[in-house]
Length: 100
Image (cartoon, rainbow, N blue to C red):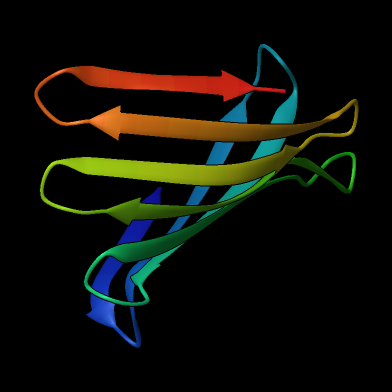
């Protein structure tokens, strides 16, 4: 199932449940997103493995967008590693991102 609410307290609240018999997992997913200003957007994502009792993915990012350009930074954490990402976008030309 998936439940999504928009423009209620914050702009995006999404809650989902996923059960996979092949992988023997039960996941609970939560997404949050909100414009802090007209150009600045923050997003949060959490995926929790209910069988193992641990977070599968925890992600936070902030994106800044103007008429012809944008950039963003983010952090993603899993039980195995932590990754940092940086993205630059030039509208009409494309985008470039790097994850460390």
